[in-house]
Length: 137
Image: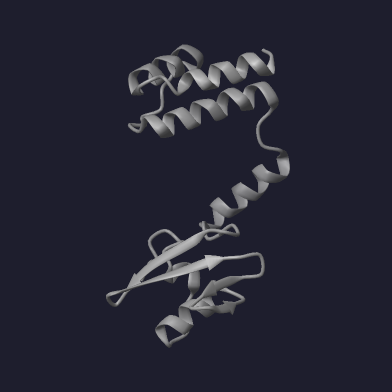
């Protein structure tokens, strides 16, 4: 399959509703995932089609994802992301930048340092901001 025809197929997914997306998935891959969100199913389908055509994740990325999953970590935050936390009736917004985090016009090296500044006591930042499953405080 050429890059242009794949691009056309992926663009055609935009016009399909949930049932249409499920039909495409079933035709191509037999078993349809139990997603109810057309947007998620569309993204998953588009990714799978492109991964088949151009190759999926490289070995180093797969290894890194497996390691993070095994450790139960989902606390990586990319630069430019704004993390929001409501705590004791107030909303706090922290921005991730290239060197660390920015909150209240101050720079911090870690999310834990921000959490400590907000609460006044030493805290695990990823846990405090709810970036680790089941650990938000």
